[in-house]
Length: 466
Image 1 (cartoon, helix red, strand yellow):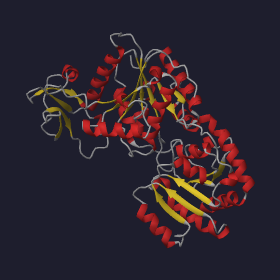
Image 2: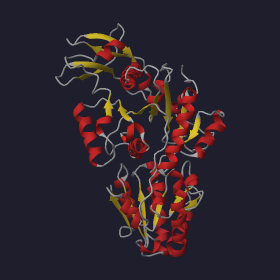
Image 3: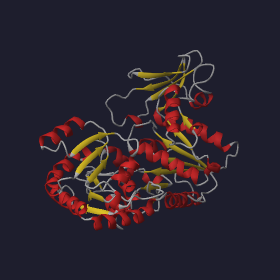
Image 4: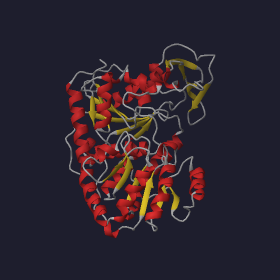
């Protein structure tokens, strides 16, 4: 990948947490974006700082960094920083930056508190426990800040106050005394993003990345949203840019909430592979899925459709990679419909590229997606796709070819599409060639150019929060 000219600025990538094998594609996509920014030349190839705010222990975070490093998922594990790793002062109590941010006050006596200790077991931060409230993160209940003797030294107002205090400290450090130095914070989490819109520093540009759909069932453009999204949209225009992964989702958002240049399309990138396995060298009849075994992936519909597939293509088989809460239920369905020799739950794979290189077809039956990273990865590997036409992702990715879209939820049409592709070597070869070409739209060079353009535009305008 050739270097993309990002504007001269300091770059921070902010996530609620980054934990190996947790949060599915979100974690992988966040780390991939940071690696691609590094490959584009940010910090001379070291890449942006990766910041997290989960209250794990320093030992937890060291283990997470080592795992990511061992899997080549981070450019430099030393560039990963965590709020609570840095909240404790060496001599006890809270760090200087946190004490300076505190105001006089006491913890709320009506609330339970989770006390975060330092390495010696001394309290440094006390977090209010807002039990049973999905909007706990927006509470302004006081967060306790302790002194070196273990006494309360003051409070900050809620999690938002705590996060902003740490980020302001980090920004001061990376600016290295140049108060006018521009800083770009790429926020990967909605729950964090809505807590940062009150951050007044005029030199900071807050760029907010979206990873998922904003709609609730039945996923219609003007349909219901949950309370988190509804509140978030009232704040959206206070971000300096919002990165939507597909044109379809951006279009639906603009049609519903109004046009604004804050909304831009920057998908999650998938790098090309060195070589693509020819259609005739793939395992005949092998269909694969790569996803969590969770309700939104609707793997049961794939199993049901495969009953008809086997009737027409007796040597077909469906290998389902991934794990999740529905594993036992799906195995029962496989046994119930008599497909035990044709459909297999393979569990997690450490080599999805090999799986996609061997398969004749990639199958997606999701009810919704943000972009559909596994679908894009299948196209990069030249594996033809059969997918339900859902919001969002498949329609955008397959608009230039590479697969077959099926009306959402119609298992008969799904089976027909699978049979058609499996029975036609010429069709598979055509779709493979189209998919590799179409996937160039999400290769890192194109995506980083789009991200750099969004940052450049944001820096050219005054901060939306100043």
